[in-house]
Image (cartoon, rainbow, N blue to C red; front, side, top):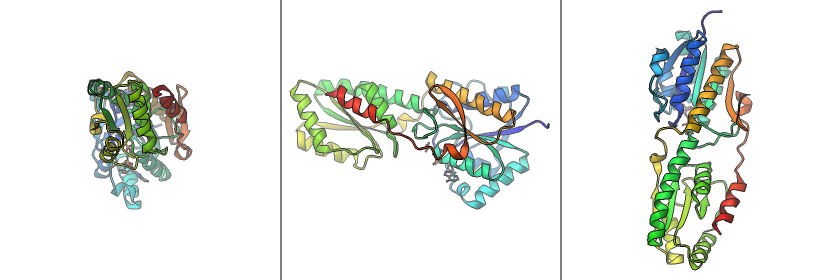
Length: 322
Ligand code: ATP
């Protein structure tokens, strides 16, 4: 068999640990005698033919860095029939017969579309959102939670010192996992996520009751996707409780930073699996981690698996904050 030519790209929002996945894919691929090509700026770079050969040295000194050495992008034109056909054509022109795509839900949907056009694609979940149903963890999630946790700890000091309520807005348009996990680890009093309803009166009642018990601080972690702006929520709380209420939006602070060991390990092990499957001649797969094991799913099937909100964590936060 001819040497396999494998392309690697990162797509969608950048996530810490993407570099660890690229590094492992390149080095394991080289070790197995494959030719590895980097594709810059996700599907947009693919459409532009921004494709370059990579070797072991290309990925030196990136393991500890956030972001992605390949760059990333969102590409509207790739989504069209014309764009998808063009992408398949470019891969054919470059003689690339398989692709490793590291990205979130949208990126893996794009990977599935390419797979339907005859290209073997390995999807690796790389997104801080943790919003993919087929895997327990996505690369980048643990680092984002750790960053939020650091912020919560600092804000908690001020909250106690000034007897203020804080609303901390974290990322998560449809998926509240960053809020849930950082809220549980950070001892938040209240967590608001897009998947579950909330009641402002209930929140205010809790603030008043906990204040009466002598609690100085009150931290509310709110996902950005919850249907009320953080400022509006803070104003309503201040009006109803008489407690000074401040808003902190963590925004892009959550995206970057050196990846945690958890993210580096997940990224590395998933990338190894992807390359080894390609070496075995596998068809398209989505790689995930389930109960600590690296698992490969049919890519079509993987994207139909629904995420389950961890209601038990939500309930536990409520119990611990009483
Ligand atoms: P994040 O979770 O960080 O937002 P993501 O991969 O979900 O990452 P998207 O912006 O949804 O980010 O998708 C990234 C890119 O994947 C899009 O810009 C587009 O090029 C491609 N893509 C998204 N959805 C589709 C689709 N339905 N069909 C083909 N390609 C898609």
